[in-house]
Image (cartoon, rainbow, N blue to C red; front, side, top):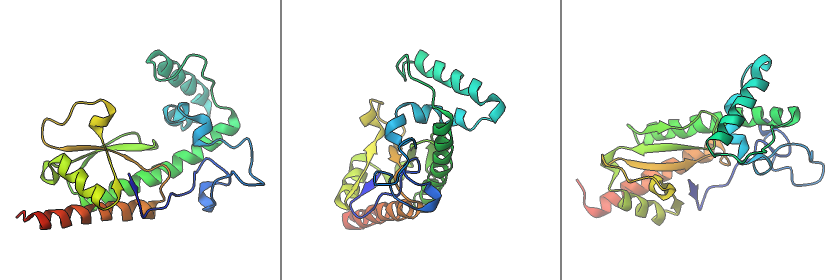
Length: 202
């Protein structure tokens, strides 16, 4: 989810640590070995859960996750496992992304109650299924676009449309600070309410 009035937060895997609030490590003095979303993508999201395994079993968990990702076709054969330095970066990212996911889920609970959420706890996006009362989907997307908020429906990912009237959306949060996420979802709810009032719906 992106908004014309929303700034992206720091990349937790680049430059200084996410907890410091600093920006990307593209400038002078950055650690060239520090992993970023770009340098580890697409492997990193698939390996994040394994990176959180206890130290004794972490190598085994990573190798198993990598084999499964290659077997399923999600990663190309020959994809390397991250180094110890990169694993430390992955774990920092995992903590930051879990915080951002929690902010997204809390905002949806507040502004779109009844939304069902799926997606791993430290991934880069969630699948949010808004209740049918917020539809139809095309009207919802149009109201969001009118407020400068770009949304991606799940059907754009090659998935069949919802059969029960719910609104399945892919909402990214990886590069948004928690405060920006909360403001973005609030703006989305306001756009829906404003459009609904303008349409004369009861």
